[in-house]
Image (cartoon, rainbow, N blue to C red; front, side, top):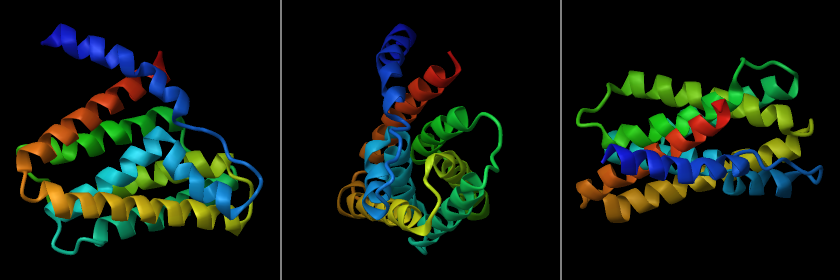
Length: 187
């Protein structure tokens, strides 16, 4: 089993090449497209939506926290403010956010929101540093992120609420991809 895990993890390493696809200078459309093209962002957004439906009474709370802190992080990144090792941290978000639905116990809501918010800040800083300054491209990133949260929420509501084992497997698979992304950023 361990050998299979590491073989699968190694096959996922090339995914890191898609984690930061760059941004054009064309404003809103480029910003909106980015969350769908960056594997780290895509999976993190979907998993926040999934987690919120499966674990929070106020299902928009986790996505709202993510979007607010993503925006703050992007503005900080656009102004050259960032924490070290942004790429490994963004990759770790996929690992951790994937593991959250797979955990046998639920973290307390404030703790989960702190984790989600912290990763949102990291994603914002990472992508904000790549973004052209201006509000149009940032608005596109934010709206694209909201759309992915909504897709994750719809999927969780329609499919995963009645199939908890599938939610666990989805979380495990996403965490595995996150592990591959983390390895690729540190190797």
